[in-house]
Length: 141
Image (cartoon, rainbow, N blue to C red; front, side):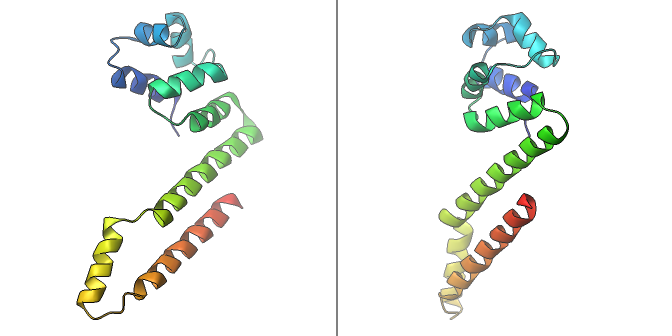
């Protein structure tokens, strides 16, 4: 999980701002507000968090979930953390299953070179799919 400092620092670095004050001006806030975010005295509004996420080149939806985690306590905080974990696992699952990888192509090439039937790749994909499903079920339960 990223912290508010991570978002601020990344936004400053990516946009080559020289200070928190420059970032503050860019997102329509005061330097004092950015300082208060860093000190955890106050948290950004949802709209400000979306702006900050855009400047940090981070997903706005994930940024809003992080904001909810930072603001929450107790069981609500744990629930928001679980939401973030589920979002992350789901994204990784679809990325892993749906995108072809060099590793998979390499394995397929090796299978054909060693007279192993390429349909073995389908078994590998099924195994990978079942692994991710079991991981998601474990995390979500």
